[in-house]
Length: 296
Image (cartoon, rainbow, N blue to C red; front, side):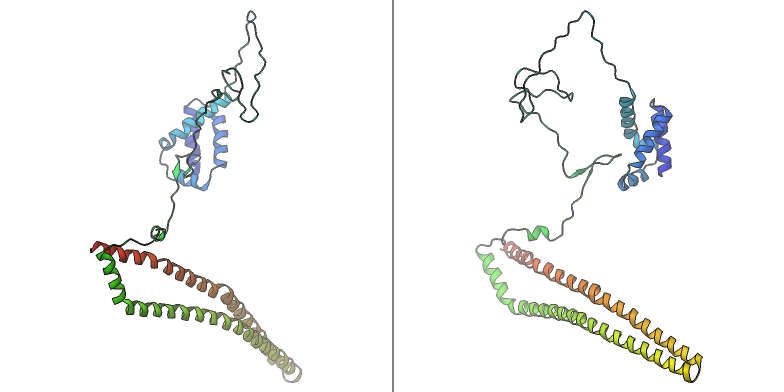
């Protein structure tokens, strides 16, 4: 359902509940101006007016409360009005120190001394929309977070401990070789990216020198050709010099962005991967210990 259809059907629904069409249109326009992207996505999922019946009823009730004039009761002539002085209040709690009050200024039940009123709080994980029911936020956790937050290693006793240490000693050559290979690959990739960053800055300097040289050679040779041989050849040579300068400038800009944006991003991702891999060492050891414990 689009927003125009939603507006027209909401106005019809409010009119059917006793609200005049002009008032319904004003309140509907006010509601449309305050909608968020989440509300618009919820409206897009509506098919008929029955999908937002609760919204129509709540809006009709709100309009009635705002439009119905308040009737104040006039005191009877034969009735005596007795005014009692207000009770002193506690400045910290704003509660009466003596006597009972039938109703507070806000219309809420009175708070008696020594009593507490339960306050209903909306859970922090619940997010309310203007036109729908509360939607619970979904928390995303990494797959390895539960294993990383474990305290210590899985305890082993008796035979399981012997099996674990025996397997560690037997697989130690393979583990050391594999770890050294991974460390070598990581260091090699790290140094390669650092070398590429340094080479990029050197390349920028070379491109600046080459572009400047091509531009000066083209300009000087072109001017000489204009003065001695032919104006057409001279203009052609000047154009070639300008093209060389423009190409060198474009390559320099691309190389600069590669050296300051692209390669540092790759280096950062490599460091994040290394940290992630180190975080997996403890869960892997725990799974290994659990396997030795289950085989006991």
